[in-house]
Image 1: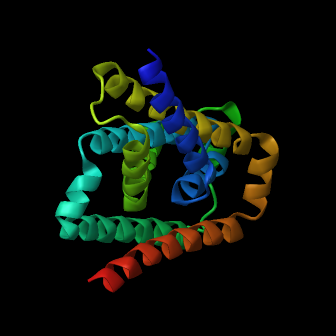
Image 2 (image 1 turned 180 degrees about the horizontal axis):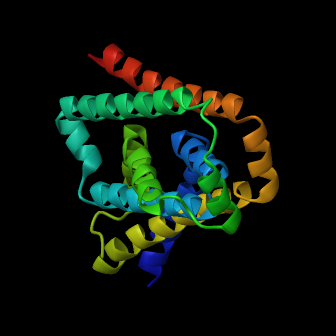
Image 3 (image 1 turned 90 degrees about the vertical axis):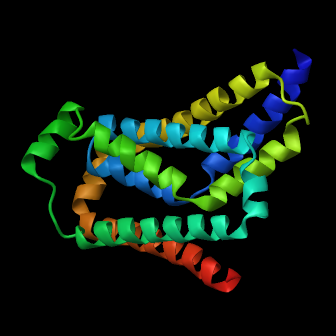
Length: 215
């Protein structure tokens, strides 16, 4: 059992630090929590956890090796990820001056979401659109996993990743969906949405500029 515990704890510690680092995932969950409802924010957090499981499984089967063997694959993933973040940022920016509907406000006050399924898919899409996260996962796994990965460890790693990603973003959603943050968001919605959209666009452009410099 100790042969499983040591690498699992190492991966968990590194992933906790990585999950808490600010980035497009944090921006998306935070905005969903304050602009929609607690339920939608938690659905987005579940989407982040699901995206983390996708990366964990991919890393376990040799994602980093695939990127090294086929550099064009990594460039393609960066291109798609960057374009997706730019698209999200523009959508958020363009909707900055649109007020929240009365029905949406009532749902949020009651603690029910407008579209939890959409929030889940958006969270998962934001998570898997970042190829740097894929490389981080693969690097951490390469550092902590033994050459021969036991089945128990292979099954435990995605479960731990899901708990870490979902748990952290659930904390973010719960904190930012309370009355005070939501009231502040409603007061400064246009500025907050423009800032969030701008951050998304800049992160996407940074990925796209990496594609250009690598080509």
